[in-house]
Amino acid sequence: MHDRVAVKPTLGPKQGVYGGHLASLSFDVEVRGSGTADGPPDIGDLLQACGFAETVSVGTSVTYDPASSSLESATIYYHQDGKLHTITGARGTVSFNLEAGGRIVASFTMTGHHAESDTALPSPTYDTTIPPVFVNASFAVGGYAGVIGALSFDIANTIAMPPNPNEADGYGEIRITNRDVTGSIDPEDTLIATNDWLGDLEAGASMALDTGVLGSTAGNQVQISMPAIYYREMSPGDRDGIRTREIGFGAVEDTGDDQLSLIFS
Image (cartoon, rainbow, N blue to C red; front, side, top):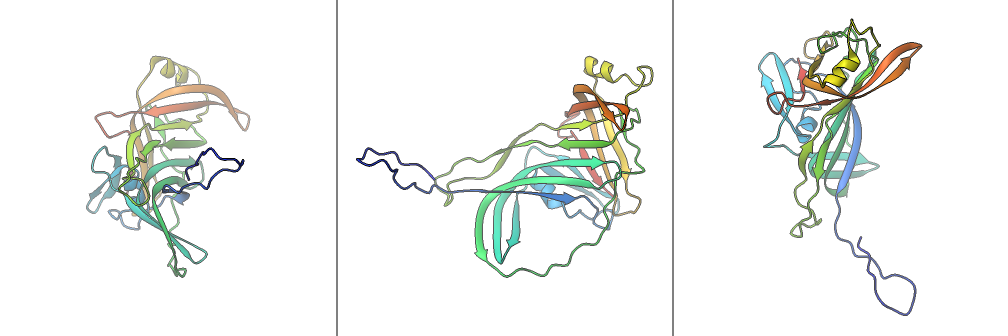
């Protein structure tokens, strides 16, 4: 709504003018496989709308890597109290959280063009697949198998919402214009001779991070890898009386559009 400021003898404002709108939707999704090694997972379409490219290796895996061109968008339908909300041309960003002994959770924020209508609630069939959990992993950073309580990372896409007077809602194509992958880990502290956490920060070391394969059932396994992370910040921490390092990191490209990979197998 646009305010209208006018010179007039009374104090009240004039009625605002509607100039169009977009919609943003945020939600969490547990990360799990499709049941077949080369079948895209149920979050596959959302990942592509967050700037990932999907690569299917027949009979083996489905991999999602960041992309910088030919980016997909999505149409999202959500039902609420007898009303259907439709978000078209949606693109967004996503973050992930892995806690020891817990599920992998993806948190999406999607933005697009919005419409709504009265529609009866559907009767869906819900997936009963149990997602893999963050146990029995082979987590390593810089080749060292650090003991962590949690790993989190954010794709941190920049979402542009350019105005367009030729569109009914006043906005043009929703676009992803940048990404800056960041994350955090909380490893138990060690002797310098075992692993020099601070030294790696001071040296600006580039290191690979890998969770190893999570899950034991083919078709419901996930692996997360980043070929080149570097520590951005570090502070002392405590977990149940055990000294830790609270580390924030950035993930950069190694050869291009490869800051991280999500591999479902």
